[in-house]
Length: 441
Image (tube, rainbow, N blue to C red):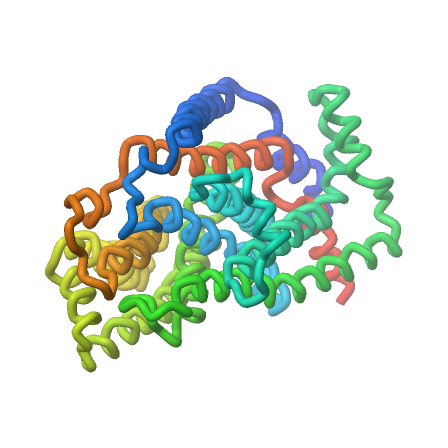
């Protein structure tokens, strides 16, 4: 296991193992081609939306937010995993999380960047985006949301790049079969790294500062997103706990995403010696912890309005518990939250393959959960719905809408694929330096 490996004595082997996945393979070309084709189809669908307007989607006068905003909330939520793994666990000195920090940061950067694009996709006139900044009102949570999304994306990029500088130097020197231009790029991006003690001190100080800064920014990004809903009087959104409710839900989806990525990289990049069963066991336990907190907020979110049962809340809860959305609601709660908690308590289900399947259900449930937060509430306005066709009252995503939404997922996967293919997915220098530091102590 990596935890017990003497990194100094096995330095050459570690470097060789962790640089091997950087080389382009046929399977990578096939996977990348699939993603590019999927993205191209979604871009074509978006061109139709630009040309014909939002009428090609299921969005109407009643339901003005649908699949796009659900997808935006999901992307913002999942991006918080970078803060959880790199900042929180890193500042707490959790050593086992070290091999997973770059995976978490790549996911965070990809999802945060695409989240900003999803906002533009939802706009009927994306050419007016600058008006949000030029004429934005400080009282508008939308302005806050865009601001923290951009800030979080920038800090996530820095938190990915800063620990990567020593590894880029290793890539420039040790990537023997790499293209000369590729190695030259690594050399430039390494910023003259020479492993000097002063450079090490600067890197460590910078990582610590960014880790501290990203925690309030990450909490703000999803708290402000929750305020987009909570500052209204709509039943289902009129809640004082939406901030922590959204943040804990973000930890659930983000942790599940990291487990999925761990399994993919472990299997396809042949990293079983570095991403071990021990790491899956720890991440699965972390998923149980954050899921239990999220389950508490779920109970609170439905028990309180259910107990008071105001007329508007009764209509909303009926749609979720036994109405049109009951099968999605109960499927999400049971298979995306309750059952994973129960199963992951047992060690057998925390093994890599089993944890992968459970994390897949959790991540799918997390997306559907955002859909349930957005759509049913929009379909139940305070004013009576009169003289409107059913298509204006009941929201149904169109094929174009689904295709564009899938395109955002393809784009996030492309970003993750490119970064994980051209960068060492396991921090090489950081782990070696950490081992040497531990020996000195």
